[in-house]
Image (cartoon, rainbow, N blue to C red; front, side, top):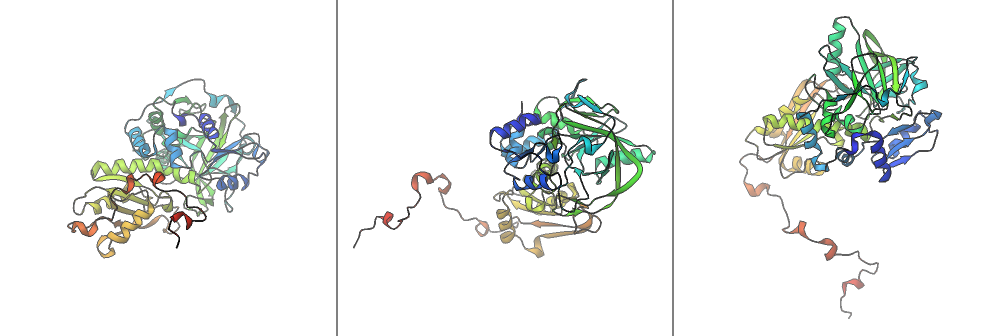
Length: 461
């Protein structure tokens, strides 16, 4: 089985390799869970027994390194993006079953605070939020969509939801236009591969759960919700069933988001929860806002989607990278191999249109490692001239979570940091020492002793 195909198997793998920390019991749900998780961010996932005295344990930090995500998918790190591309191209439908672990226990008298350990993460968050819940919706044609949204706990059975202009909102608008609510299911405690699949940028109506099946190499077991036609992962930990309420908006926010700022408070969509089902001894997954798991979970799937979209039109595109410094959303580095004159500028314009989050695109040649920020900066420093290679597009749709925009409208920028067409080859030839990479440094060198001068074996006068 692919290592990330099951949450509990993945936790066991992390534990056996020293990458799962066990917190002391009773860590405070208000800031305590987030504080511990942040201190260990990128080094260890964390398991919290009885957080705030609640009987349901919390896990966090499941996918806080690129290498962990590759391991979960059963591939080398360099093959992670191509593997995700392949899964998006060839999705695998799930297999529906009737008896599922996630429906072992059923609650129809819903009190979310009593049922779930709900942490408050950042200082000015309005209160507890569900941050790792996969929101699954289904349209009138039976097509499903899976995404992650911040979900504010506004009452015992009520959640405030920020819906950005993507597929969930499109499904809801169709239903709300007819004056009807939209059935939803919120899956908490999904396996790592399904978490990754939920972030794929695919056409409207393509079910991301089928991408999860392709990543694991076998159909994802699914079960029908008790109160709707929505299918959810059968082996998940917890499912909240409910409805997105038509023509209802209530205050939501602020909430600490991935750009390291707070999403503002405003009237937003509302979910009413009618049923909660879960395993007999469930685990609750939380993603700390702005942490590495938050950033990388959206990063790798997007890189795969961006690479596929760009290569469809521009075969010269060889790699893409969303750096952490750009919040894994706003800055895109694109590597090209021998582009035609002017083609790098076309790549920039195409990349800016793939997703509204992309704010700055930098295109570099094949000799520059797009995953190395220092190399990309070097290319800009030595191959880019602002009066020749800069593209600015004002007044575009952008991320509403970017505080520098005006209500989600802002400018986009492209930097062509490729070697200018027609340049003399020697002018842009990088320096290099022949044979350097093949040297056996271990055999040729050793640590210098404290009396280093004696080690030089110079003859004494």
